Image 1 (cartoon, rainbow, N blue to C red):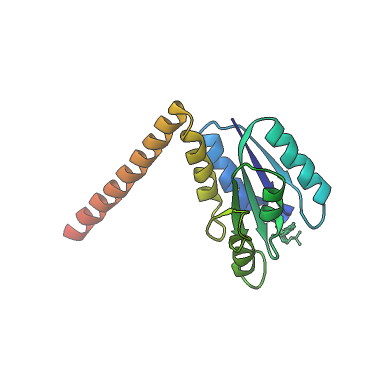
Image 2 (image 1 turned 45 degrees about the vertical axis):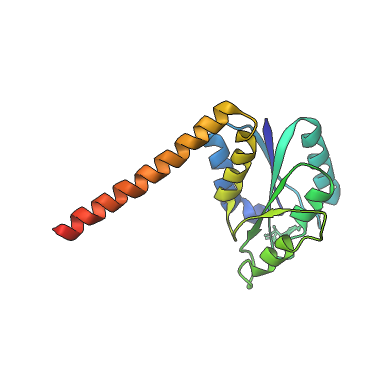
Length: 163
Ligand SMILES: Nc1c(C(=O)O)ncn1[C@@H]1O[C@H](COP(=O)(O)O)[C@@H](O)[C@H]1O
């Protein structure tokens, strides 16, 4: 099980590292590359087709501005593509959000929130967990830990209010 992470520019790296951090947490192998549908189209095709041949389960594709990258990744694979619109221009991610979410019928890209790299990786975890019992258990535990933290935060707040 492997995930392909692709971003359009080195300037996207800080945000995209939030996706690789989650995959690290779940011990899911990944390859992360900078490749652009506009600037290096052949590299995008090579990466996507190679990872699909190697048994990848999904792609995470992040791009800002005129974000054609996730759609172009989808054109080269039948695997699920998770798109992350990135805040990279004066339009603050609205440009890339609209570019990614408005895929033509028949060519879906699962679109996350602007800069939603963490959720993109969790979505990939969910895809893997549907077919892997161990990963599902890990993800269920992740949800429990998150719920416990909210409950603990609230208990702390209630304690502070009483004082
Ligand atoms: N949207 C795309 C694509 C593409 O869609 O192929 N290639 C680069 N970019 C985006 O352009 C923004 C600015 O890139 P630079 O900082 O390199 O000028 C980045 O957010 C990148 O993802």
